[in-house]
Image 1: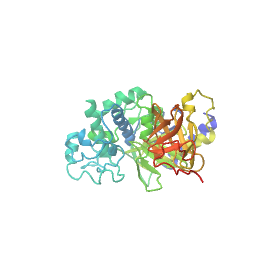
Image 2: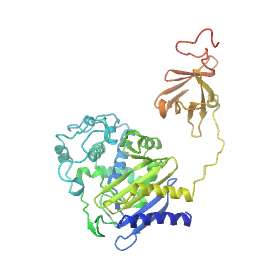
Image 3: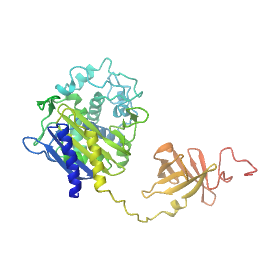
Image 4: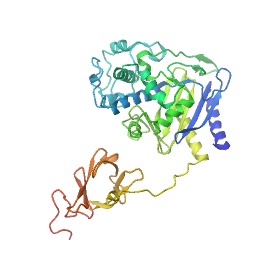
Length: 448
């Protein structure tokens, strides 16, 4: 990056460390799937922390557990609508679905009963289930957002049961290894920052504990570095390295439930936190454990993300810092649009493009560069969706009103396309074309 860009980014990081009194802090920017800048301020063992210094991730751990669950789904081993009872029988909360657990809509209690789980040695799965026999479900499953650390302890056990090994071994083998994340571990290894609480009224530190969370570990156990977390940030932006398909990661980034009302600014997809601010739609997660804060966010549309790790229990604006690092990067080095180049098009697809009418309303059907179709009103707002091929003359909606709906191409006796059937709605080349099979027909006297 340009020296001026790097100085602006380091200046923003230095301001956060100084004004928020963080013992140490590291941050990075990811662009188009690559780590393009990283920096550190403060001291770890007397030196400036670097890209290989481990910090605790906290709840960013949940995104890796969710990825392991989605791999099971893509392999056909489970369905997201399955009730938990189908896979983990005998719990008191088996009616909750896997999708509800992923999106924090299961109604499960936020924290495990007993001692404060983040600060005490965790019990095993049997003990956790026993503690949840009574009153584990606080809200009707599916009714609303209710963040649940317990839910991810449950999902970790779900992964373990299906794979026949611990959730951690699964994450190592199926995610960390393939992505080259060699410095992500359940406990600190090598160079690492110790966690501290900063006194609110004096420049003093208190060491914080970092016990093993046992069955609750899938909710926040992992430690990692800037280098590894940058790779994970790129993954959530769509650079998946074959661990999941890009389509599945995009599905994880889709909004399931909002956290703050109708005009949402935060919410959740499938294991992924969503933030909408300053014209951006960001996906990732924040993390908080005693002595540590973490944040990883990516704007998949813009191809840029940022991440922050600090060893302070509270007081550092990690989310805003991530956003500022992205904005500074784009202000100093705006991305160049990709060059347009012509492509080869199947003539059978080309003949489908152009003007169609839903009743009297004109629509345009366009071929997109990625081989999809876009159907949208020719002018003004209205129902618009993209479609992917699923068979001969058959397409499925990917988003908006027609998501999941089937579009079929109808042809005349000569094989020429003369109408589109979209979830029983008929689109014809001319408004209410009498040659198209419009349910109910049209007035026999036509337009007058």
